[in-house]
Image 1: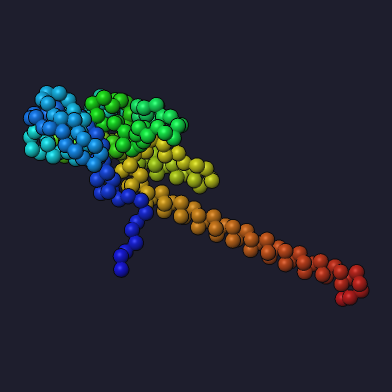
Image 2 (image 1 turned 135 degrees about the vertical axis):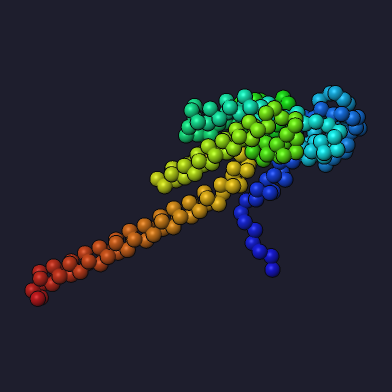
Length: 245
């Protein structure tokens, strides 16, 4: 008998999906176009930059056939600006996600629009001051697989850790809005952050739901007791009016 699966994606599954993100490589050798499920890749012609899925870029990197160009948001200067925005400019909210690079049309015949999380937000042309949907896992993967392609990898690792701690503290703090019946906004939260914080948030919501149910039961019980007591007093008054003792 199969055990029930936990709700949502696990961190391992999120990291697997992250490998479908597009990154930019600088090829060292020529490679013809490959027919993949997502469509054919562009041929590699050194030293021209080429976008490839992360999993393929990592394979070519291990074979020393290409270098991976980090996205602009993974530079130390960009991470410092984002961290400042998270702590000083918007201490209560998350920094916004990157803007959509394409015009979204309402026509049902338009089928070329790419939707999150698979936007080209981790290529060399990505915006520098926005964290994409897979920012955390992609940063950790690149630090492990191609730290020699990154600028100041030690500094990048420290900034990613600081960003993770600041944003997780915000996520835990956002549950306070749920206590008063408010709504907590998670706009700009990444895939790995959702996966890691799901257990905590769901636990808090279950606790609030049980607390609300117990309060409602106590209120109804009190109303029932007051209703019974009031009915008994009315009967005694009626008996006195009719001369009964």
